[in-house]
Amino acid sequence: WQPNMVLDDGGDLTHWIHEKHPSLFQTLKGIVEESLTGIHRLYQLSKAGKLCLPAFNVNDCVTKQKFDSLYCCKESVLSGLKRTTDVMFGGKQVLVCGYGEVGKGCCAALKAVGAVVYVTEADPICALQACMDGFRVVRMEEVAAQVDVVITCTGNKNVVVRKHLDRMKNGCIVCNMGHSNTEIDLASLRTAELRWERVRSHVDHVIWPDGKRILLLAEVTMLLMRMRMRMRM
Image (cartoon, rainbow, N blue to C red):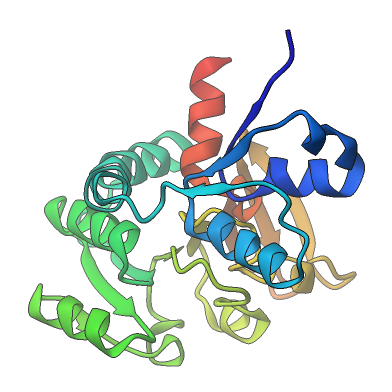
């Protein structure tokens, strides 16, 4: 017996096979990808003429978009935050970066427990949806210094960069609900001036020279995925 299908999330397995074991593609029948990040990576392979198998886009399926991305993230974002931080979120100021289906779920869950939720969004239609749903749409620079929690879920790169992190207040919680770990510029925090301290599983303190601490959850990989792994252990 040998596998004949790639069931992927984020394009990680497809990329690994393509880079390390391309001969495996000869025995595979196709690729099934469930995330937006993975779909973008497949399009890049296709454009470069390197996608050698049929690929099925599960991400754009209505049940994935409207149910899994929305409702599962609505349940899991609070579970992940509470398991890692033991913090009460009523009254906390939270910035959610991105108002796609994942962002909508995160905003709804946090609003339901009494958090004050802000949204950053590049797409004007999604930004208008956030406004109509009762959330204040802002630029990152406007609220970086005042929020208690920052959650990224855009699928883009470098949404939160060093200049934003420098402005955040002591104790701000920073995490990612998108698939990849590139939404928050982690490399900019790996410098000699900043000190890292592992305080518990999936929680790091990044300490500035003046003593300010930022809480990074799951090293800015997908919080939901880390919580699934933790529950299986």
